[in-house]
Image (tube, rainbow, N blue to C red; front, top):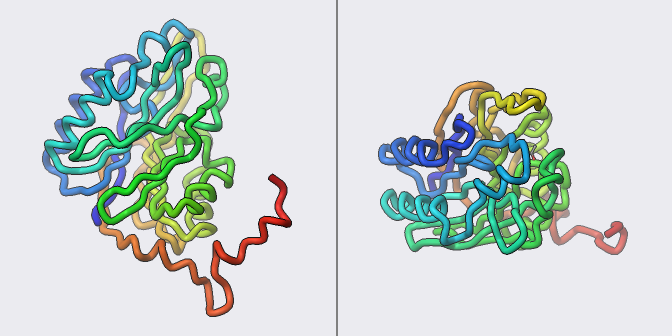
Length: 263
Ligand code: ACM
């Protein structure tokens, strides 16, 4: 299947314009699965709760999810994209999964990063997987990478591909995802953004780009630059993620010893 990332440069608060820019680019792309960044259409650096509430949307009825469904249908691809979700009294840092058949589901970020903890509720969805064409995909969001349990939980649920919408500001993740892929024998697609935000009197954030696709053998199949928007799609064979044999004596997931691990 053809799978990849769209590394974008959204303008804070310009949701419609950011959606239009993404949609305009998708018409010329041959792709089965495309991962977009965390908060793909709103921008990242919220300066207060009011702004978070204003830019958060219901899922799946809100306009961003509906727009994603519309372009997933039109271009016959599955899309994973981050957005601030409003649900009752809570706002979540969420990612939707949509495809040609419509809305498939939503994941709410488990491990909130830095000031996200001021504005968002910790995700209550748990880690989830979806069957998308020939692949089973699992979703985790940005800082979830720091907890190996996130990727492991998705691998144990049979995910072939980790879809990883991100707004990375620390330098370590692109290299760390090589390990996340290797230690689970799983593909990973990290979709990061580029550019800077310095809103209100907050310190500037520089997003590090370097979106990537990594194979179950830990090979970087594609990696984007640090500062330029880029859409890249690669051909992958999901069967590579289903062979968990390391050698004739070691079967990666079956050989785990959970009785010896802390919970
Ligand atoms: C992050 O979780 N946005 C770093």
